[in-house]
Structures are given as C-alpha cells and as structure tokens.
Length: 243
Image (cartoon, rainbow, N blue to C red; front, top):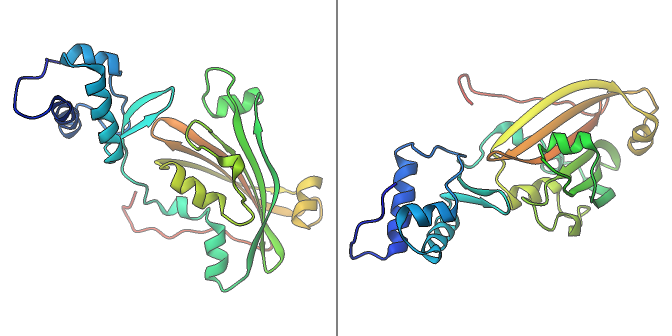
C-alpha cells in the first residue's frame, strides 16, 4: 500500500476511497478482514483518528462490519435466504390464522460454557454465551421447543429481552446480519424433559432442526429447534438454480 497523494478532499475521504477501491476491485472480498487501524495508519501515512473516522463512516454506510475484539470485515450482502425465514415460527402460525404465544423457560448468560459449546462457537478461549429456551404454542398447543445459544459479542442485550412478547428471531435479525446458515435435520424420540415441556409422551417422534448461523466469519448462534412430529412439518420451495 502507498501513502495517500495530496488532493483537495479531506484525508478521511481519501481513506474511504482507498478502502472502497480495494473492495470494488475484489482485492478485499466479502467477509474478508481488513488490515488493522495501526497497519492502515502506517501504510497510508495518516493519523489514527483519520483512519478511525473513515472506518466508522464506512461501517455506518453498510460497507464494513466491525466486531469488537475481532476486527473489521468487508460487509456481506444482506441475507435473502428462505432457509433463514423458516425459523420465524411466530409469523408462520399467525399466517395460518392461528393464535401464537410463547413461554420463556430459560433466559440466562452462561459464563463458563461447556467445551463442546466453545468448540461450536469456534472460540479459542473461555467466553460467555447467552442461552434461551422458549416454547411456542399454536392455539395453546405446544408445537416447537426452541433452544438458542447466542454470541454476546455480536448480539447485545439478549438476556434483557422479553421473548414472551418479542420473537427471538426478530431480535436476532435486527441485532446482527446472518450471512451463512447451516442446517441438520433429524427425527428423534422425545426425552422425558422435552416431552413434559411439549406435552407429549416420552418416546414420541420429534423433528429436530440443528441450526448454526454466522455473521461474516464469526459464529452468531447455535440453535436446536424441536418440533412435535404429529403437529408440525418442515418444508421449503426454491427456484431452480437459486442459492
């Protein structure tokens, strides 16, 4: 990288042009990490305040995504995947003309998650994770048990919400852009505790959807959605060649 040439435009604008030029040329691809502020200061020959302002404005304009303690990344396109939409069970139930309500069973911050959970989030050290368990009812009949583990570095204030009123899905969509989704679906018999919460018999068949989501390169959520097999079905429709 070369230092910025003199011109009439403010230095922070030239830094913005430099960043956008690298993005536009493909040198810095979507979700890639930018050089640190110190590296940009050294390479461009400007002050850290100038670089900070440029990156802050590019972030507010939607070109960059800054993650505290992780770095600055080229912002990905906004998600348009049908797969993400199937988690919004509140909207699905109401669209059928049915009555929806939610009951919060657990809402907590886990300060020292189990090693398996740290691995799922790809954490390199012990870090806290937010945790919720919510039962969704359709016409007062439980149809889904939703368990979510949430990265508080990406989603602030999660444990302070009232998810009996606001859907977890809606809060997550506004808190952080979900740019990648992984799904695994299986059929499993209900254990005693899940059977009690879903008002079914232990051993009854359930559809289990394991979902992991990312914001850029960082894991945002690790979820398990359990549906009563006799009360719910999962399905999607796609155009041929769609992504």
